[in-house]
Image (cartoon, rainbow, N blue to C red; front, top):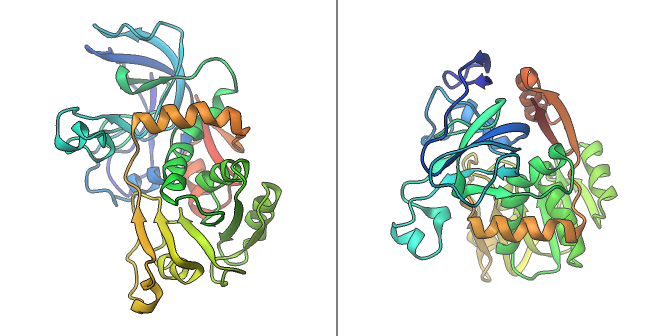
Length: 327
């Protein structure tokens, strides 16, 4: 197998040749056909996630075909198309798992962070966390749904039932969330990097009511604001934009420090919430909903060996939608 390996934080990925892995009990070997490139991969590369282990193969938006089954795996079959996301395993017995909150598991395993991920030709995954995808849709277009879509969906649900939704940072997650929210009959207000007319125009093509820079005030009070950019300074900005009782939901796993702000911006029962990982129930719900909503991810494909270029383009904001590695 071939894999793009991150040997230590701060380094570039290196292409390695390895023996094909063998799935253990309860595991499945997947031949990767596409793997999305997520901002979380940049956090892993930059050493910003304390739970990460190195060396590691990043990548947690995996689409592929079952190549081999480990002992005891009965619900999947060889050749079946499956997807694997960020949450690669949960213990099933801690208080959070017992309460149906496996996203908060005390001893989780994260794909492409604490176990090898999908920037490779093959990957081993916990079969219980591999989602059957059926045959509809192209592999590359499905890959971003496995994180950008899933986390975006959980973030949107935490926003409540409000009609006017602000999206701060219009990348992979936001461009999927925008489609779902519009299908639900909501209005989308997109806030991008100041001066990024390309992203703003892209948002308008997806049905946004408004698109402008994140440094500008909202044109009208928002019911909720979803923050996908890892910039802590956007939290006070979003608080000023939401109405009384409104919600600001932070959808990323890492964010720079949030600067201090006057209490009056939080007063009147405004709320700041964070999203942590996702559950398998989130995945089943969203993957069933996405075709109904007509979700179509905008993707730019890259060969596996050009993973560093894809990550550079993501970091620089040169992408419209999502980057996807195609081994």
